[in-house]
Amino acid sequence: MTTTGLLDAAAMPYAPLIGAAVLMRCAFERADLRPVGERLLARASAHPDDANAWLDASFVLQLLGQRAAGLEVQRHALAIRTLYALPAPARMPTMRLLVLMGPGDFMANTPIEFLLQASGIAAQVQYVTPDQPLPDEVPDHDVLFVAIAQSDANAPLLRDVAQMLEGWPRPVINRPERIAHLSRDGFCATLDGVPGMLVPRTVRMDREAAMQLTDSAFPLIVRPVDSHAGTDLQKVDDAAALRDYLAAHPAGAFYLAPFVDYSGPDGQFRKYRIVLVDGKPFICHLAISSHWMVHYLNAGMDDSAAKRAEEAAGMAGFDEGFARRHAAALAQIDARIGLPWLGIDCAETRDGRLLIFEVDNAMVVHAMDDPVRYPYKGPAMAKVFTAFERMLQSRRD
Image 1 (tube, rainbow, N blue to C red):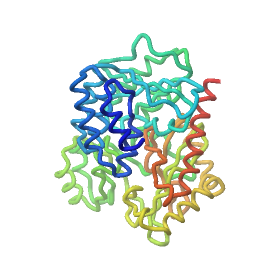
Image 2: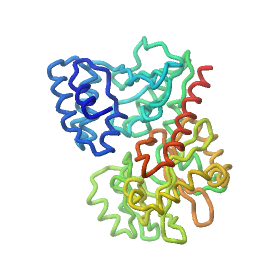
Image 3: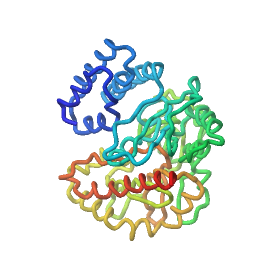
């Protein structure tokens, strides 16, 4: 969507939902979303029952870094209506998908819009909250997909949704009772003992227990419970560093895990994001960084042709390389976690094992990268999106 088209859509009363994927792409391309947000909020003020305006405005506010304001606007949208039609499919609809989501920011649910943008699937999102359970009547659909991510906040919601879906008359993908086990300590316990795989033992501790750790437990990786994307993630080398960290972070509970040096012979750290679609692995990115905490956006991929060339080679050779080397471990992840759609952030240890950082149903998987600079990414991501659509279609059939 062009900037002019986006501004026009933002100003049009009762217009269809612009959607998180379109708005996030604009932010990714460094477009100025402030005028879009201003038009959406003006439209919502003039038409207080225009739920699409409120929900799109909540996305824009979050993308502008105003998370609290965005979630407040989202609450207003959901008070008006809990059912939303996602943007129209790219081609003639071939099936109807109902997606269950909970309230929250972009990491609270599977970002399914990115997965459907090139599909022929007409999708509607039904939001549910502890105070607003699944309605007695929902739109007719061929398949239901549970997008709610695991978190402390979502734990009661996942329990409620699991009860709601007992005996559901349509196929259900990503059962909530299985999503509930994806906490950092939960998936660690689930995957314990898998041959050829290293899952650093992750422990949840309250502040008082963490303060009692001795130097023999270090170095450690520490983060607040329910934090993502490296937010407040830190390596601490001794008890004094941990106490300093705890003094600077007010959270009541933390995850702690041993630090694993997974750097290669060249001193670089390589993090893979892969997804399992009905058990088959697909690569989404390979980020290469001189720092152990690797995130694609800060790994310097834009500035290094050599890193991009390595990622391109890794994507081209993924099936015969990485996926084959770790086929048994990945099969065990699929069997033990039991989710048809699953994201995995991982690496390889110096002795060749699969090192697991995170297993989650809500990782962002997209095709927003510049096709000139990253010509290899589009075809790789098209494989992911095609596999996702086929997985949905197979359940309907």
